[in-house]
Image (cartoon, rainbow, N blue to C red; front, side, top):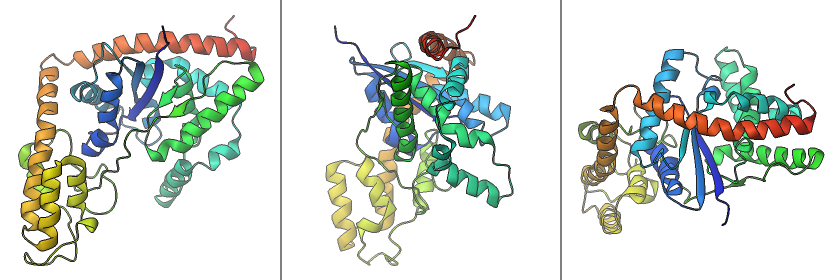
Length: 335
């Protein structure tokens, strides 16, 4: 019997999940979890969150919310392992061990570190060492369960490459231990924000949250930026520069896509008509997710904690075995 490929990915516990998270990553996670040839581990990166967020109540709340989101978008916790990063202390131990093989210069060159460092310095905030060693913790996340496949966004590719390099380096020095993890890419999806400034993010004015009501979706889409050159209803538009059309391409059917494309170019439909169609289609995506989530909430406050407990035990057993082997090979076993 062929051994299953191990898939690992995670999401930071930093607030509500939105349509960009769903279309850009979580929809793909759900598809992977239903693949019988894959063994999937999906974690909530609450240790990573500490590099930029310090309110413990917020972190705990967001953790439980993401568990519900994972399940409501179609990940079955009886098949895939859902766990909190903090449930596996061996991952921190592995971070130290891998850190001893990691040149500081490699970490200082990471785009993520340079970007966060510049932003914090501009605000007069402390640049904590966790921001520098963040990629080593991510490498430990990946190598702990000996992941073969890592589905992540483009901004995380340098971190996965570091994990690959550390796996190769460890195997060369201490003997074959880790598979070399591969980036796993679904269809490349970049979900534009509503304000036209870039991809969908955490801002209330830039995002459609998975929890948004139909009324909220309609209100947000009605205020979204469109083709700036289309000033009047009868002006023809250019869909290629319109955020609303970019969202249609990710969400709407082929027939509707053709309708809004031609209607915009010929001014047969106005921007508000186009937005109404998009709002309807977004609501149709969110409604079953929200219905499933409401059912999960009815299970009580302890339900997400039970999922985390079960998943944490499963993940820790596997990762602890890896770390025990790594420590033994490095000459620092537990005595």
